[in-house]
Image 1 (cartoon, helix red, strand yellow):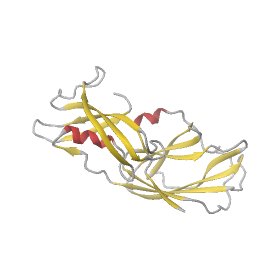
Image 2 (tube, rainbow, N blue to C red; image 1 turned 90 degrees about the vertical axis):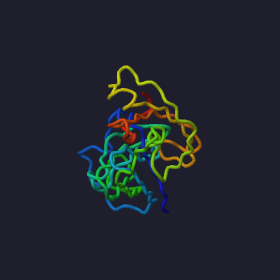
Image 3 (cartoon, rainbow, N blue to C red; image 1 turned 135 degrees about the horizontal axis):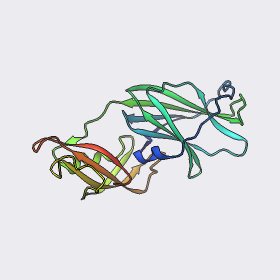
Image 4 (cartoon, rainbow, N blue to C red; image 1 turned 60 degrees about the vertical axis):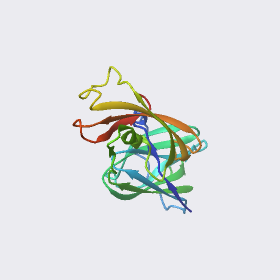
Length: 215
């Protein structure tokens, strides 16, 4: 079984508590059974997540095979909404396979396996002559599909460097509906993200700078 999933997350998730998918002293996982294969397509530099159902007592999801950490760099692990969520950062363009196996405690036998083909692609254009359009880059890339509800300009918070003033740096509140969601932003819900856009000159294009769930 093969699925397509774009699991990109807001920058604020990097603050989640750090966990470990397996103890360093645990024996390596043995032969792997067949399991579902999920394709994750994500842009260079963005965060993405792998969500697995929280196992029962005595069972644990463990990283089962080595993957290329320069393409998919593991960051955090946290329990959320009945899942174990592993957070990664997309590195340089390329592809690698991340494999998780379900084992009892830290034994070698794999009871189940999940395969994630991670494809990291180069930065898409996130600039526009209209700042509102540049701000829409806060929406995760395909295969995530969103319907924009509104893009509203907001004042820069006092704690944010002015960056040359309102003619060069602006903040927008982007609200969108997830037509096709991912592991972090499920389908069928409305989300609001804050996007900063900047330009280097009065006649230059506005480009997406950063974003998150709060200003």
